[in-house]
Amino acid sequence: MPFIQVNLGAGRTAEQKDALLRAVSAAAAEAVSVPESSVRVWLVEVPATEVLVGGQTLAERQAGSS
Image (cartoon, rainbow, N blue to C red; front, side, top):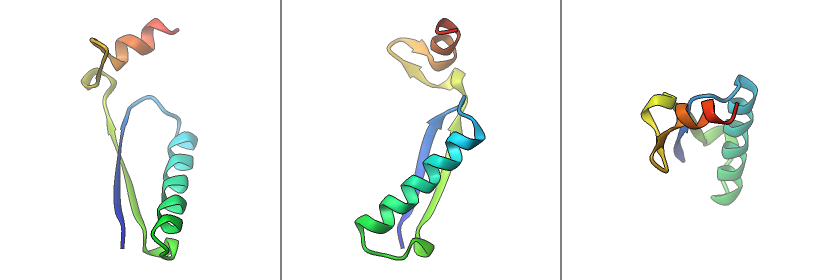
């Protein structure tokens, strides 16, 4: 039974998060030849102020792209 934790910087829509979880679940089931009902996937959102990318927080990068 696969257990998969996805860490993701905050800022995605509920629909995007749902699509990601479903895609990961389906891919894992196919990759290890198990029924999708045995796959466990959960998402941990990391606040944008607590993720550093290239010397800037994700929040700073998001604000700069607006």
